[in-house]
Image (cartoon, rainbow, N blue to C red):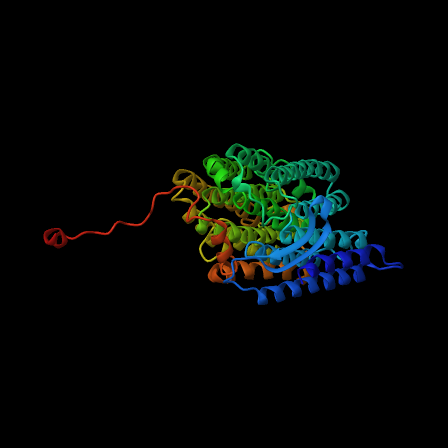
Length: 507
């Protein structure tokens, strides 16, 4: 059944790309929606059958493939990959639905979206290192083309930059995987039997360092982040939704699965440095976002900061912080998707994203009142306001990380305050005040644009009020990922028991 999450989108993509005859834009869109709708229903079916109390991998599929290379077609699902599989199918459905019906070259466009979905699903489900790498590289081609063909004025530059950075990331990850199998003496690249902890510590440190840099480019973390703002600014709105909501999670997923999971001893050595690295990314992303005039670039830099929270949680590596990383990946995917959708609507209706030009869009008569209201909700969620899913994810991360790295955690908490600052600047400049002369009498926003944003907003609030609906799927797996209670020695936050005078007297 797991294979269907990969092959149904691939077959839909092939049908769109190679079916003889004419498929107009309307039929291409409908076929893409049907294909990803089937994939989403299959995902829901898997969720319904998933055993939340089972910490092991479920629904395993293993087929020998190229045994001389150690490559097997091995898939499985656990609490770490399940929320991300849901996020991938759901946001792909949102991206296709929010695509302009009159888009150029629709067959090519929708086939690339479906191929991208299949590649990401394959990476999250793979239990063979080489198979993971193949799917990791598969998503590179469609995303490059989606930016290069349907992007903005500087789409060529942004696409090439993305291609170079991601190619370097893939080379480093493949080198790390080759090193793991070679040094452990394994004949296969299968994840489960790798005895990495038996390696000398210096070898573990080298391999982990290679993988850290490779996945940090994908996340991205400072200083490997420069491709992300350019890619977001030039990409179309649906592509930005997938890039921020799903594609960045390949990097954070890789840190958890192949960093914390394979090298716990080496992770202890790197952990303090990683926590400090997280602080740099969080503060840099927030401070740079404050300086932006382009709404889309501001949201892009906010992603860099929020990915830093995940690095902090991974560095602490407590069961609570690791659970927080999964919740943060889902919450960031939903919130960033909402923000990029709303920025896209503003740009479509006004022709600009410049905060020096936009003003008063919350005007109930001639502005974009619903878009403004949803934007306020989205920025509140991103800033970690209670009642939103963003608060739950950040609270789990900070509560799980503080006993291990109190100073770094407090500095990252200050990043949430800076998040409120730059998003308040965005809302205050673009949506409050007198409506700008350049953007008066805006046209009505169709329901095809409103519905995806409203659905995302509802999910953000519902999961914020009922976080157990999200955490229950991953808690067993994330707890099992940490062999001990904590990887890094910590000081307990528990209050020591009070001994009464009567007890002293009795003794």
